[in-house]
Image (cartoon, rainbow, N blue to C red; front, top):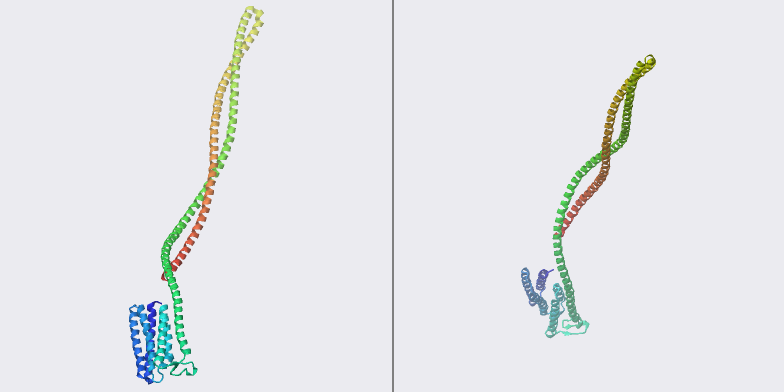
Length: 465
């Protein structure tokens, strides 16, 4: 509670004390007190109301000075002293009424407590000293002007002319103890208040830092929220594209499987064709050897035919010579006459045999020449066939080599396609894992948005606090 608020509370209590003084004065009037008593009480009530109104005006202006507080405190003690002093005008009790009357003494305690509300150590000491001084002054006036004396006789406790040190000294000590207690309480309270003020200052600084942190946190939360929304949107877009990507990969996988099957079939067919062509090449090579052997046989037959033709020529020459010899023998036999007739018959037979031999030789020659021509023609054909087989074998070897290369390349292609297939399978698996991760990330992003919303609400609550 600040100083103005404390003075406002104290000033409200002053209105109550004004009413107390006013009622006391009216009661004094009604009970038949002497005018000096009730006029003094009513005067104090009016003066106290004036002091209260002056303080109320300063409080409304929030202009409470230390001088005003000390002045008001001094006047309050003076008012108590004046009321108690006015009681000495009582014709029956005199100063005994001023000193021994308990209700006004209680006012010292009440005003001390009110003064203690300010938690001002110096003011509490000032109030205690002034209160004790005013009470001692009353005792002094009672002794010096009221004819009162100190007595040790207990029977004179209520006597109008006697005072007991055993009664008055405790009152003074009580007033001093009250002031000292209020002094200690003010010291303790002020220390606690300073600690509270320091704590409040630190708390304010902490709140300011917290406010700045909350503001920064709001900004960061805003950025995080924006980023999270972007991430969530990106995750959804990636999820859609990943689904399309998975479909494309599956189509690629199916195409690769079909292509793998086709390449595998082509590889098998190429290998089978290579084996078939190799077998055919072996057969053709064998036929080539047969053709070469046949060509060699035809060449040998042609050579033998030429030899037979030569021999036939020799036989034909021999037949021609024999025919000439037979002709000469016939001529000689004709010359011999009857003696050579038998020789003529032999010569004629030899001539006939020679002519037949010549004719047969011619026929054989013609056949051999025809056979030789056929053999030469056949040899030429066999040579062409042999050359054809040689070219065919060369071509077949090239084809077999090409098919073997195709088979090897198909096998390598098959291995490459298998590698691609494994890669596609891994890609499909990776796509599935990535899709699952995207779904988890999307879920985490939604959860993060919820957390961010909670943080934003918490930040707003902190900002309001």
